[in-house]
Length: 420
Image (tube, rainbow, N blue to C red):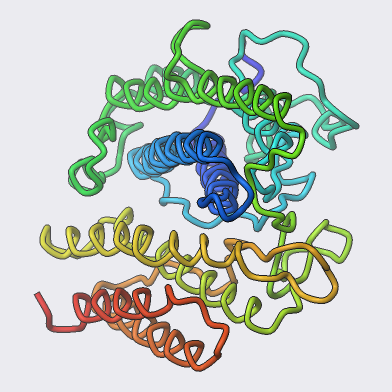
């Protein structure tokens, strides 16, 4: 029996929800590192070094798209078996109690430490000698008996592949126990298809075969279908780390990333204590820019949540939600994230730059009804465009605010109540 044991629907939904949270948090870690990467020879890189750093940035961008696919696949699996899409997650850095010890995730700027973290996260199940630093609270949990399993609880696992293979085993077991028709109770029409995001590998889930196909995509892209899978995340990060070490050995002054703080925040998240490793920014403009970033990121998450719920909207309205979500990522979140890592962290952190925190507030819930959702999202986008204009009054304001403001205004107009 696999370490990740699933014997009822509640436990299946619990672990699919945990998988969606981890995929979302890993995605944010990758984006944070990408935003922190240098992008000009004026930042102390030679032409050859800049070319290599830009190639790494592009590779991380490709991996981020696939991580979005994994998150979307987890949401499809959830809705297929009677759960709800999970777009919320613990804020970063994650608590030692959130996930198994090996998944204590942090926002680290691009450097060798970040690459070590990424290689470790994506390592395959066949890797031996996994090192776990310090005790895990899950180690001391009582063995799960058949009676204790009536309440959904955590499972311990060492890799994402192990988690997903446990979910795969659980799906097979429950399909035999309940029958496929009773296991996959979600409406087939409520599945989010790859056409919405131009993700060809996003599989709508409606039976055991399609569920297994969705899981195979996740596992193969992450750890690889075999030890020799050169296009897996693990292999791509491993090659990137080797190239980084070669450049650093040739030039000890080589720094591919900006001096960005680890775990930077404009405001302390309510779900963290003072000893959580968060670094609070205290440059006024940087704080305002990070608050803008977090707000734009949060409304994008809410929009994606409404899309994955797949409830009352027409096909045309779903397309508008999907297009606007992608547009927010490309035209708002990404340019803001890049700009923030060029700003100072503040007097408490001399020599360091700010960084986006991907903070989610308690209010980051999915609007429950179509008309209300459209009104709320339109209103919020309009407010954020106005906030851009307010920030532009500062002489030190990044030039990117102008294009971000224009993009937000366009998205707000598309989602205005009554618009097609």
